[in-house]
Length: 447
Image: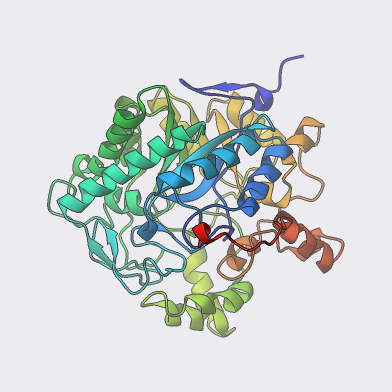
C-alpha cells in the first residue's frame, strides 16, 4: 500500500517532523504576570502532543513585555525563563513531538493591553491608530527598530538554548511585522517605508539577526499573510497582494528561512481568519472587557450588545466571505507561494477532513497543514485520522465561540452541542488546570 502522505515525515533543512500536521498557534491566559510559563501551559501543549501532531507551533510568544497581546501569555524576554521553556520542550518531546516557538510582538494590534502596555501608544511602523479597535501607536525611530531587531535575535537564541526545535516569526495577521510589510498600514517615508523592498527591510533584518545569533543549523520559519484583505472596514486600503507576498517569500528563502507558513488577513480576528461564524451574542458578553482598551471599543460594543445593530456589523464583516470555503481557505495562495520557492510550505485554514488534507499534499499545494480550532475541538484528531476516520466523530462546527470567549474565559471549545452536557464541556475546558503544587512558606532568601 502507498504510504498515507499525511503520515509521511516532513524533512526541513535542520528538522524532521514525524507527520504533516502542525498544531497552529492558539492559547489562553495560562501564565504568570511576569511572563514566566506555568504547569498549565505545559499541560495545554501536552494535550496536543499526546494527540499525535507532528509539531506544535507555540502560541504568540512576545520578545518584549510591551509586545504582549494580552496578560497571561508566556514571554521569552528574559534569560532566566530559558529553564522553564526547556521543561516545556522536554514534556512535548516525550510524546515524540517537536516544538517550534512563535516569536512575536503585537505592535499596535492587541487583545487586551496589560500593565506593561496600557495607556501608552504601542511601538509600530506607523502613528495611525489600529482601525478596528482603535489601539493607539507610534512610529518607531531607527534606533528603536534596531533594538527591536536585537530583541528578536536574543529571543531566538534563548529558544535554542532551551532545547526547542525551532522558531517561527509571526509576520502575519496584523502584528508588528505585518504593520511594516503592509502597503495599507505602513505610511513611513524612511528606509522602512514606501517600496516593498523597504517595507520588508525590518523582517529581513530580523532574519539576519537570528541567523547571526543561532547560525544556520537552527530551524527558522516565517508566517505570512498571503493576501492582506485589509479593507475589513471599507475606508481602509486593501493592502498587500499575493504577488507582493510571493516576492517577500522569495526574499525570506534567500535570507536563510527554512519554511513558510501561509495564512491570510491583515488583522486578527479577520472575516477570513479564522473562517466560520462570528457569534455576536457571545462577543456581547465578553467584549465589555475591551471597552476601555481602544478608542473604538465602546462603538464596537454597541454593535455587539444590541440585537438591532448586529445585522449592520454582520453585513460589513461577512461581505468578504461570500463564495469562499471554510476548509482550505488559503490553499490556493499556498499553492502559488510553494510554486515560487524551494523550501517547504505549510498552510492554515480550517482543516479537519483527512481526504482534503491528503489531496492538498498530494497535489503539491502544500507540504503540511497547521490546525488550531479543529484540534481544540478534538486534540486526538490525528489519531482519529490514523484509525481510518475521514472526519472526527464530533467535528468542529467552526462556530468560533472559542475565540469569542478568549477575552474573559479560559481557552477551550464552548460549543455545547458537541458535549453530552454543559458540565462535560466545562470539565474538558478545566482539565489542563489540574496542577496543585503543595503550598509552603517561602524561605527568607526567596522573599
